[in-house]
Image 1 (cartoon, rainbow, N blue to C red):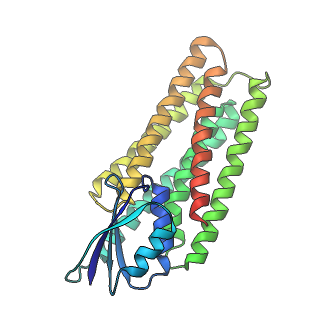
Image 2: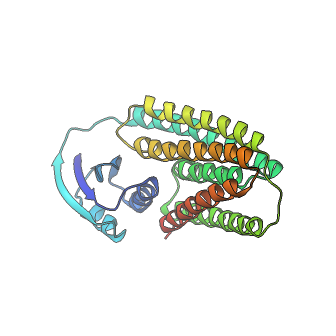
Length: 264
């Protein structure tokens, strides 16, 4: 078995990690992938030469550079994979639950901040789900799933923007600040639980580190909606809710474009 290390300069988030995973799906010799997103590095454990792997990575145009390759003794990775899958299923379930809860609460309370935050939870669910639901499938199947998920997320973001514009123009009531604060606090607890589960894995391969980055951003978004709810209470205006909603919809739309890049 060989271990080949690459530097991928433009790999800085879970979307790029998934792009790499999908691109390398068709390379039969690969046994395991270990990602270091903060260090922009990828370790590939494989049989045979590295040339096909390097060519596949270069096709992504993420500025890939071969660092070194070496022959090693075979290393068992099945237990690590099972642990990662178990944790990702737990995190996925939490994110899907709060997506539904925040979406319903957002419509009931008239809060675009909650609706936007629910879509942010959905964006995370898509990233986690891509590496779970399509496991064992072909690269083509994974790309189709990524494309459908990306377009769905983008459509929701566009609809959210349209509703924000409508409310900026004077339509819609001032949101229920109490519901905003309570539901966002629950979502904050959910994301904190996800972060704990991911940190407890102590894994260098990121699904884990990358997912922790994603979840940490969600915690910031939750705080933003809570602050918006407090500002709605203090000012009696719906503007804080709309501002936070706009910011989060931008993040959701950006995430959708990254997922669509994965499907190419």
